[in-house]
Image 1 (cartoon, helix red, strand yellow):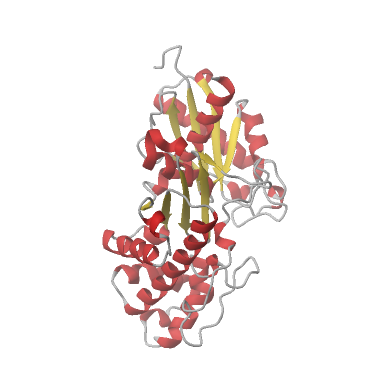
Image 2 (cartoon, helix red, strand yellow):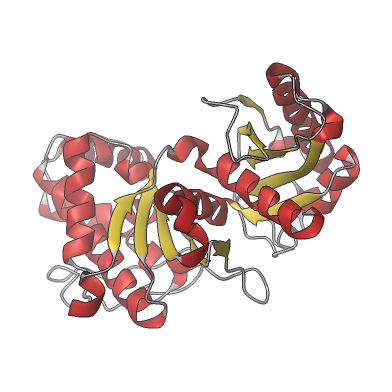
Length: 344
């Protein structure tokens, strides 16, 4: 049980199928060592989903024996697009397809339900914040970093002096939609890649599962017509299998992931000239593979990031640790920092 002087924050990572919750104490210790997942029920609409977040909150406090009255704040993260204040896009999103989500004040609704201050970040920013603080520890508030998270799309986050850079409308860190040079990246006769956002030749159009499905796999199957994946009926299903082939050092998969890594390196080159961070972090499903594959992928990204000599002497390239827990933990770190700034 907590002493009267102790205080806590709760971090809740909201996803398409589950909520993951954690607890952080006033000394910076996480009380939860593993995933604590409960159904998110976002497909049923905001009312049901907010109630599910409340249940996840109560469950993790009960499990850890933490008094509700000792919780100063809750950190919430979710997929975007959403504003810096946690209002879901008026067009909805991949996860928030129920019409009632469009333009919904997610942060405000959770705060009203829990009657505790809620601090919102998108999931990419939350994971980036966790990676930054784990890597730099006591130096976190004197350092900067950029995180790239390769999943269905390409997300990420920018951290300066230990805090998330959100931007005027909460869109800072939307690294997937930065245009990158395609010369020397694309193979002979390979079409320019299209992104779901409508852009042509942005980073996400190559470095994402969607990029594999829409752009990379259709082209490379014309170069490897006898490949096993040519016999998979759905391109969507085939795209999800590419990582496994990459793990096995399959020739076509290596071509695909090499193009992705080159794209990420070119994106980080742009970042290095705009932001010049202390560290570059990489995470997502693409590196949830064997150590050999993920180290090769990270090394290929680094080899294609053009840095100046002065930068090379100072920067770090690393994988985001414990990515399945990074969202909830990053959300909790943001809530703890808010609490210290507002309540001492």
